[in-house]
Image (cartoon, rainbow, N blue to C red; front, side):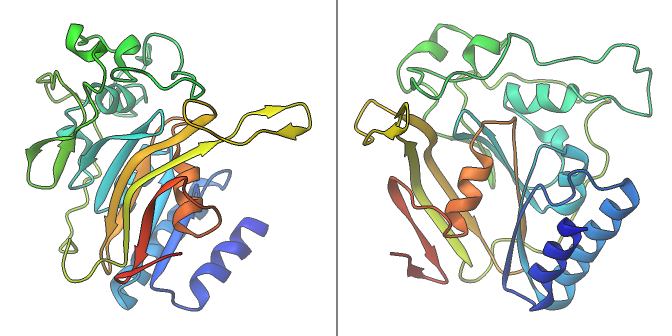
Amino acid sequence: MKQRVVIAMAISLRPSLVIADEPTTSLDVLTQYKIVEELLRLRDTFNVSLLSVSHDISMISRLSDRIMVMYAGKVVEMIPSSDFSRARHPYTFMLVNSIPSIQEDISEVLPIEGGSPPSLLTKPTGCPFEPRCRYATGSCREPGGADEPRVVEAGHTVSCTVLPQMKRDARASSAVRESAHGPEGTPIIEVRDVTKVFSKRSGLREGKASAGSGVTALDGVNLSIYPGECVAIVGETGSGKTTLSRIVGLLDEPTSGYISYMGRRST
């Protein structure tokens, strides 16, 4: 009930932007559906922008116009629609295929291979997904090899040196949202080169973050949200989704980079 009250408080004053971090977690499916439909109704009625953060791909597919996929504090892919079948990054593709479908035999769920995401205490020298990627080559281990996003189509960027051609899978989401809302006018929010490093703790004391130390929760993140647009951030636990939403909501400050609201840079 507290969660429902907080959602009601967030939308009652018709804000220009709603930041929703796992808004439907632990709610029953009917309530989840009603909340998603209400957020979409608000968007269409009052031109509200929405930044949703979640690991729930089905909810993200229904709610979003654009999707950002995060891994180890970095945006590894930006998809210009809610169609996950357009995924070009191996992590996005494997993330979608790790979820069972009610439309086919689910006797075996295909997990993401290779263990867990990398420790954020030590920044990977190459692509952070390389140890778990079946398409990895020697170039993926080179320093900065996957830092620069590659444009594969209009509005679609991928931080990958391999860009394997993966065939469309039946498990890919079928709930594709085609929307007329898109990047038009002045952005509500612009996030530019935002990095967040949390200092290490020693007992009860917290040391001062310095170059080469601390936990890098975000690493050079860029994002723009336009009026009436729904943008989703999706990724595993620990990928940096909540840290980004807290910085966008001014609940935390970036270590470097900046955020601007309606063209005005925050301080």
